[in-house]
Image (cartoon, rainbow, N blue to C red; front, side, top):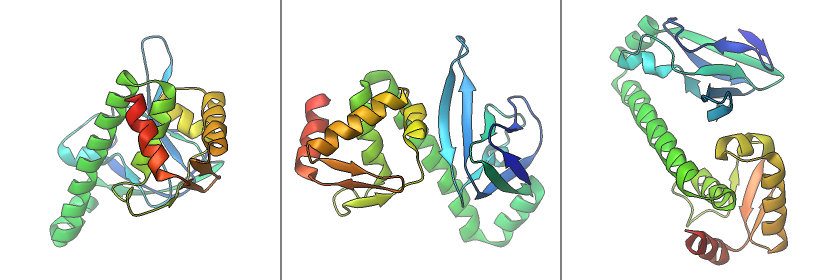
Length: 197
């Protein structure tokens, strides 16, 4: 299925029992708070699945799924087909449940950071999370986030993200491109994290 940017893939309370795989573009999972402001839970790209809570017995969607890429292509899998695949291949089944657990942990961590930290520290924590446990070993990480995506995920404006990225680049701490983030000075980066905490 093909979607254009801004197309709604599903709404809260929808009962459709399908999982989705992003084969092209980006998908935003979000809710709206009582003030009508968008709260972005995740931004997914090629190779990632969503709508997987139906495997845990959820019969209604809890969020909006909206196409973010100009041309977003999705593959649909019925819950029956997915359960059949998981029964036939135990390793695949375990992978899916592990994926669900990791996603819940990420959302809980992001919520904790949103509630307790200022915008600059939220950005530093977001960058750290991109390294997913390889923080000590890796210097550069690939990503698919625009500055606007990052701003939505950490609850700030694109201008604040841009200003902070420029500030950290001038300090020779990190460098941001459209596809990579490089830690130029890990020691000072870690010191900044600890200082802000």
